[in-house]
Image (tube, rainbow, N blue to C red; front, top):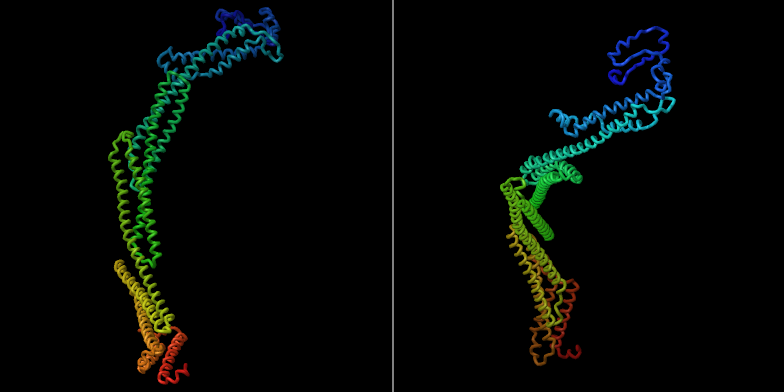
Amino acid sequence: MLQNVVPAEVSLVCVVKPDEFWDKKVTHFCFWKEKDRLGFEVILVSANKLTRYIEPCQLTEDFGGSLTYDHMDWLNKRLVFEKFTKESTSLLDELALINNGGDKGSQQEKERSVDLNFLPSVDPETVLQTGHELLSELQQRRFNGSDGGVSWSPMDDELLAQPQVMKLLDSLREQYTRYQEVCRQRSKRTQLEEIQQKVMQVVNWLEGPGSEQLRAQWGIGDSIRASQALQQKHEEIESQHSEWFAVYVELNQQIAALLNAGDEEDLVELKSLQQQLSDVCYRQASQLEFRQNLLQAALEFHGVAQDLSQQLDGLLGMLCVDVAPADGASIQQTLKLLEEKLKSVDVGLQGLREKGQGLLDQISNQASWAYGKDVTIENKENVDHIQGVMEDMQLRKQRCEDMVDVRRLKMLQMVQLFKCEEDAAQAVEWLSELLDALLKTHIRLGDDAQETKVLLEKHRKFVDVAQSTYDYGRQLLQATVVLCQSLRCTSRSSGDTLPRLNRVWKQFTIASEERVHRLEMAIAFHSNAEKILQDCPEEPEAINDEEQFDEIEAVGKSLLDRLTVPVVYPDGTEQYFGSPSDMASTAEHIRDRMKLVSLKRQQLRHPEMMTTES
């Protein structure tokens, strides 16, 4: 080992054997024969005889010398030094190869240095730390000894190792600094290449498969379900795009970080990549948003169209059912419901037009250059569909409006019919009330001729009112016949109202005629009686006419008899004027007048009785 390590520095090797070794046996060494081959002399000597060859100050205490020395400590440091020297030397070579880009060696070695040895075989930080620790120990004037802790001065080889370690450390720091810069540059270049590769992946996908997906999606559907299916398909496309947009966001952040680093040589390329990526992504995002807005507008359009169609179907179904309302209130409620439904349809159609126009505006603003495709045919199909839906809804609404007009006219005619029937029934009631009033209150025959004439005149006016009421009822019933013919329904007035009206009018006519007869008889009675009862000396021959007295008496009796006779209606029923007391009072008044006439007659026959009677 000595021969291999330091043969030129060794002149003598002393092999020390313990004393017990000499006592046991004798051994013959023939090292002197190897002197020429080894280059130094080898002798076998005991420990107490070493001072013959080596000064005691150069021998350790184990061999009887005074040299302070810890061999294990020296050996450990020597091993550290040798390891550091080996690693640092190897590391310097690797770093030089990396930093110089493989200027030395073959092209294969260059490629290997770039590809495989880009990372050193050992960690430069670890080697530098080891070197600094070793240098720190070498620079101490005192080293930790063995167990005794005795101080001793460093050996010559340790002093010589300090500048070597310092030199290696300086070289390592220099090469490591260059290596770090090379790594930074290569890392930046690698990062830039990776960013450029990812940018092109994003751009190529968006301009390739992404654009192809959008090119294939141009329809808006012809119903809510179709629009929803297209919207779902678009959401799937958006989901695929969102993954690439996430990559875009990440790349944009990386590019921004590199731009903030301020490397002038990469600014132009980075900004170009950033601009290219942003242009493509924003353009694709705008197309996705436009498509989404278009589908949303189409979905809203079809939703409004479906609601309007349902409203029109409901209105049409209501109009197709022939209704037979029971009264005017039901008709008014039906008319109100029709007006509300028609108003709702108007609002729905207006909303459909607004949605349709907005959708047409969006379609007209489509940019065919966005996908590099002429979309005239697709747009024409969409426009024709939208316009067709709006025109169809307009026609359906117009048909419903026409039917509503017809139904409204019919309802108004039915209102008139009900009103005529109601007014005709009211006329019957009025006529019945007039008849009742005639029989119950029109019972007086007057106290004299003048009063009776007044009563007769009032009665005629009363009859005129009744006649007007009857005529009014007849006109209303005739109107109901005309309305029923117009409505094509069975005449409702022939059932009960007309017979009642005719019956009451017939009863009223009979009672009225009887009232007129009684009043006329009363007038004749009162007129004749008043002529006789008045003192008329100029016409004694008139007063003395017995026939007048007989006539008055006959008229009076006939009038009294007539008061007891009831009014007989065509159906056989009988009705009296007033109550029995009312008839008795009237009859009593007539009888009193007849008594006065009879007394007057007796006075004329026997003048001598006039003084006494008076």
